[in-house]
Image 1 (cartoon, rainbow, N blue to C red):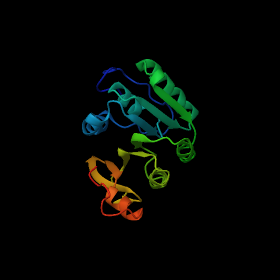
Image 2: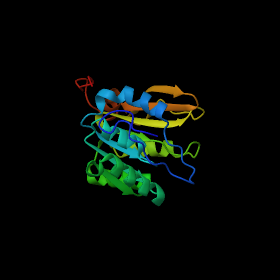
Image 3: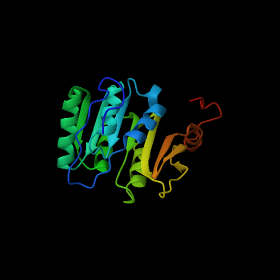
Image 4: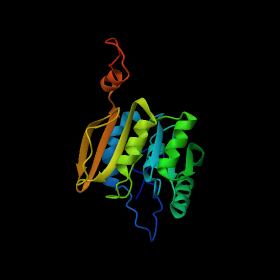
Length: 201
């Protein structure tokens, strides 16, 4: 597991030992960041179920303004902090020990929003959809932002989750990445805005 591009390119990251974790593979990570490329510089990146911090640190290497990591496992939290130290990004990151659902509620209370939200909960544990619903309900995504869900190809995801619309899906072997963006036409209708509502996002 390594940093693929940017300031810390080639730096190898620590992995979690003895735990049933599934870090995003380098191949899948590279494909994701090839898609996200122009959106990364200056963005606020939220890495949920962060594990080793692999995705949020890659975003920092490529120029994100800040990466926020949410993880509830003490061993994983230590690995995230170690990997931030290895790559020199300690001052550009916030590491939060909390459950994801609890942290999302606190972000809402603090008025925080994110440009890119990545979530990779354990496969087939029925955690992705409640998390996606919470992101929608708490209005945590910036208007031009994206939510990415990494999941097993057998898991089905809705075309719509509140204001979030499934924009694309990419498959890499048994791994699927689902991309959600805000559907402004649907939000305008739900909020009762008139025909002059600006949909050109």
